[in-house]
Image (cartoon, rainbow, N blue to C red):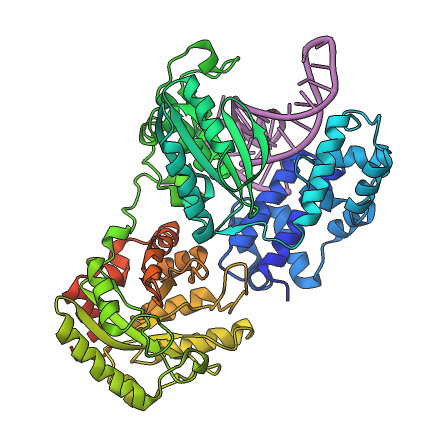
Length: 592
DNA sequence: GCCGTTTTCGGCCCGACTGTTTTCAGTCG
């Protein structure tokens, strides 16, 4: 059965092949948009295609034509026009599009004029001088750039093309901190997908507000001379593109302070959100670009004719002038936010008042109970839950029942010793492959809180995985399902349960579904968390603390939650102590 | 190929940078 990713890949491939063969750019964009929609869909599209095919057309950018292709793919495992395009284009050609500075037009010229049909044949053509004299491509400088692009492509083969947010954002913050010290710089912000809180980013966008043109030159100089720059990809008066040693690309843009808001809006994206904003501006007789929102759509561009913008200095004034609430960056994905009449007050890091998933040295954590409690206190939390692994997680030194019972006593003693914070005695109990929990109910009943998580058998088929999670949710002693799919970002896919079914059951039984905040996990992912919200389930945002620094991952979990539209009143970590006790007790018939 | 608070047809965002060009094509985000 084809996965959503398979369908998305097929559409991406269609788009690439159409580009190379000179198809309509709008058609290419439509396939790209559809690929994105399919990749982000929380539901199994093949199931939808066979059971309720009409529902496909309700999706963003999916019309009758693309819906019929999804149905074709779901039922036959292939698409006729994709096969046709593949037959018309050498199989090694699309890979050329991955070369820096090489787009569809260049690929087409290389193919039709130069007889190039793969990266390998391009490499030999460069070496043999066969490209010399080719229109636009055959000049010494262009050939040198192609050679560099091929070398980088071959060297980077197998290296990650995207970076996890928890790796990229700290790099961006270091760059931003450096540029803030440059004279004449008024403000520096990270924009792009990192600001939107996506789980992975392809590059980093750093926006620099400058007080005068001279500052732009200093910023440029400071950026290119940073430690770790392996290549300067572009360097102009308002833009510098760099590649860092570990492969991450950083784009630094310099803008006048007066236009900072417009530029921040523009460079935060998403691209699709921006397109919709601009269309909205046009519909109101306005013109939106990265310099501002202008009362005019003539040519040349209004900022070049000295026309004063309606709004430009900050994002909120631009949204307001477009008759909209300010959309939080995490929600700027063209998922219907343009239709909002007011913005929800989404959960913030400051709303989080307890951590409900943490490990100690008793299993595989690095902190003893007391140190963990002190860490939680330092974060201003009223409660920390000690949830060491259960016995099935032997590799994590999971606790036998006897050890667990002694550990509960140790937790009680620590709570009395530390003071000023409540320490819950809990467990992260394995959800075994068949849905049974790793401790029996009698043992679970002794705990204040139970986080039930899958750790093994993560390649189960979707139906089995769904039943497995449902079984855990129905257990009356379970409060939270921890990292429900077990996926590792850029690592393993994990389980693919029917998230709507799981979320509906969680809502019915009062079980919270966790957004594990570790940037390797972010599980639930954004689309799953959104489905959970829509089903009415409660959300937990937990750091799954194994070491002190893990507490700093909270922001990634919160960003993921915000992408899903999670509000504080739907997040159990935002409850005050009384509210938390009530929620925990609800599952025990009011025992607390 | 999609889509509709002017539209079921005729639109579909916008500018910077590079390398080639005597005014622009291609790529990128």
